Every structure is written in C-alpha cells, then in structure tokens.
Amino acid sequence: MAHDESSKSALQPKLVIRNIGLLLSGDLANPILDADTVVALGDRIGAVGKEKDVDTSGATITIDAKGTALAPGLIDSHVHPVCGDWTPRQNQLGWIDSYLHGGVTTMVSAGEVHTPGRPKDIVGLKAMAIFTQRAFHAFRPGGVKIYAGAPVIEHGMVEDDFKELAAAGVTILGEVGLGSVKDGKTAHQMVSWARKYGIQSTIHTGGPSIPGSSLIDKNMVLETDADVIGHVNGGHTALPDDQITALCERSTRALEIVHNGNERAGLLALRTAMELKQLDRVILGTDSPAGSGVQPLGIVRMISLLSSLGGIPAEVAICLATGNTAKMRKLDCGLIAPGREASFVLMDKAQHSAGKNLLDSIQKGDLPGIGMVIIDGAVSAQRSRNTPPATAVPEVVK
Ligand SMILES: [Zn+2]
Image (cartoon, rainbow, N blue to C red):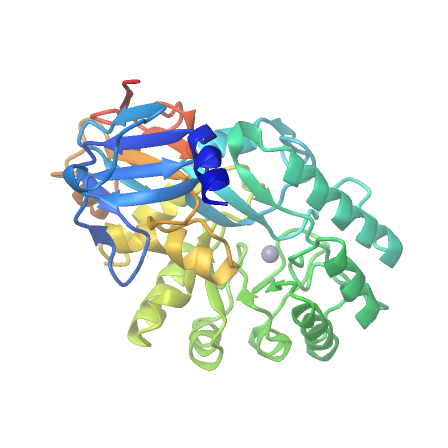
C-alpha cells in the first residue's frame, strides 16, 4: 500500500510558492502566520512554513511571490447564478470569470431565482435544483467553484422531498422567503426537514429586493431559524436597527453581510457582533447578480468597507470572507493549513495607494491589487484585469 501511495503522489503536481511577504491564514484566531512558503500537492495544501523548514524539492511549478501577501481564495457566500457564465438579471456574459479577477475562488448560490420561467411546482423545482447542482459541479468558469442547485421552498413540500433532494446531491436551499412560504411556522418545519438530511438553509432578511418579493422581518427570521441569516443588512432595504441588533443577540446563526445591502446596517451588524464577541458568525457575500448589477470586486470592496469604516484590522476583515464563511458553509477551503484546498489569492497594495503596505491600504479604504489567483493548486489568473494594479506581482519562475 505504501508503494501505491508514493507512486500516486509522484504523479501529483507539486506547487511551491516562495518569498511570500505576508501570510494571511483566514483564521480569526490567528490571522497572520509567521511563514513565507506554501507547498501544495495536487489540489491540497501540503505544508506551510519558512522556506528552510519545508520540503520544496521536486516542484512541478514554482512561484516567486515577490514579497506580496497570500490569503485563501475569497468566498462569496451569496450569489444568484442561473446557467453557464451568464446572468439574465443584467444580461451579462462572463460574470463569474470577472469575479475570479476579484479574488473569488468559491461561490455559494442563494437560489437560482433569476432563471427565466423558473418552475414553482414541486417536481419542477426539485428537477431544476438537481440539474443546477450537476451543471455547476461540472462547469467551473476560470476554475471557480460554484456550489449551486439551491431550491426555493414552496407550499406543499413534504419531508420526503428534502430526503429525495439530499439523496440526489442537493446541499443548500435558496433564500427562504423568495417562494410562496412566507410564514415562520411552515418555513421552520421545512428548514428543519432540510437540516435533518444535511441541507443547509439561508433566509432572506429585510424589505423586498425587487417588485414581487416581500418583507421578511425579525420575527419570521427568528421563528424560521435558518442556518444563515442572509443579508442581515438587507438586500437592499434593511430592517430597523433594533431588529438587526435583536437578530445578532437572539440568534446564534451566521450573520451574512452583503455588498448589495445597506452599508450603514452592515456596519451596525458588524459592531453588534463585535460587542457580543461573536465575530466568528460574520460572513460576507455580494448578493449578486442583482438589480444593482454584477460586482466583480464586491468581496474586496466589503473587506475594505468593513475594515476602513468598521474599524477592524484588514487581516481580520479578510478572515470574514475566507475562514469564517468556510466554517459556516462547511467548505474545506478558506484557511491556509495542511489538508485544506489549495486555493489562494496573492495581493499587494495598489499602485500609488496612500497606505504604507497592503493592510494599511485596506484600512485606509483602498482596494488591494490582485496579482495572481490559484485554484486547486493551479494558476487560474495572473495580474487582475479588474482591480487597481498591484505594486508588486508574483511571477511563475518554473
Ligand atoms: Zn435576498
């Protein structure tokens, strides 16, 4: 067996990233690592440490980070994909590939609700969820992983429907409240069935997003008790402040802050979570594509917003978009640690930023310049076409 293992590892690509100037772990408990080298074997992180202490021999690809910062690939906890790399919401092509150039390596669907002619009968919505899960599992624009196939619950669903969806590979529900179920009692029942079979749930929070959707208030969110309080800062219309603080205080579920929400309410949710010493519940998404368009830089804009106006260190803000989201969404990316997914974003301060370095530039409200994105141990993008240009850019040397 030992022989089999070694011959298997000999076939795996070995990626060595050296000369990392700042290693951002994604872990809220320890956001900056004292290390300058990361080694990946295939699609997993093999070792993290000082170059002299890790085995860099036999690399199939070597990257000189040129002293730039390395963080886990960013996760967008709230997207609304439809099919392929197309969104009908603003009729744009290639939007997922554009988010890759904003450092996003993983996306989680909050429901494929923009699908033209979306079926609302139970057989139809189940079929669409299974189809979408399969399609995005097989189709990864630029390498980006999209966890999709997120059905929106409708009246008439029974426990067996959730059992059947789970058995078919569905792992997430679309936003509760975007379908016909608008009462907490029914929503709680269905979310509980989903949880029983390992399907995670998210609830829409706040005023209606577009004509035809409706208000979900604090009482409905608390009664439903979904795993993720989706856009706690509204999408875009936020709940009154006292309802937002009540959700932070009276629920233990994930608090999702989104780009396409109310920025002031987002800062309130962040501050409340900090006062409760529950920053580990805060996760980030864009809630896009949406009426406000697609935002390739939405997650780095959130990091910059929360750090510069919310008063949290930039390395902590990055944890919200990586390790926190991975933990709450049960993903094996989002942390720089052996065994985790080898997906990274390499950044430096943007050219001519007034910040002293990358972290200081983010704390001053600037966006980072992205120099490279790596997914599953392979280079997916080099200098970003969307961020301001990074001062230093990593180089593939072998
Ligand atoms: Zn929503």
